[in-house]
Length: 278
Image 1 (cartoon, one colour):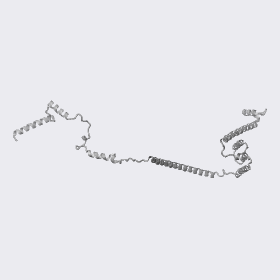
Image 2: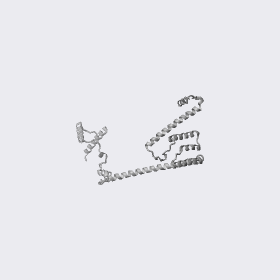
Image 3: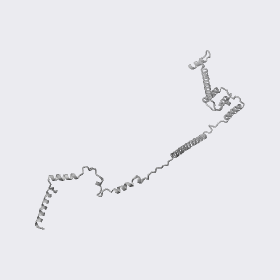
Image 4: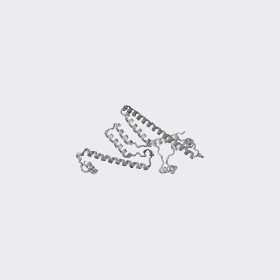
């Protein structure tokens, strides 16, 4: 290699170092026209209709997308390969199916009702057992107080015996009066005894001491007979109330005769007026 060649290389290297030191970046020695031409060339290579959305290929490795691997993975989770396709049954018996469903529902209802009934019966028996135990305890504690006198039983038995004898002989029997007389065998207070007498009085007015055909009547009366018995009972109660009211008026007027001073002609209207004004 000649000496001139080395001089040229030295000169070029010096020029390169000087330019780099001044600008720190190699300068492009192009004029404006050349820059415009280069820019147009680069712009023409870029497709204007290309979508600006990035695709998966830009984010993958240089190998691109493994389409076969993705297809295999998708086939593994496809419903056609995972689940067995259902077969259509051509011969169906809807009536038989509905019959089976009806029988099943009926059995379930019967089973549920049986369980409910069994539970209620057990609860009832349990409550009844508790009440019975409590009643036994109460009976043992008050055994002396509920003892029925023997003479009371004998007196009622005597009345029933006489009633049966009268029925066999078809003779009238004053049942209400006989039962009224049994009150002396009871230990009733004064107010209770008065209520019992009132009850017997109402029965006396209701029966009117007429027992004709009583033992030959049907057990279940007709509607017309029931209506007649109701009217009879109302009339008997009304008659008893009227007599009881008049009796109370007489008792009050006799007890307070000196204060009331009825006197004069003895009439019901004067006595009623004196009773009201007293």
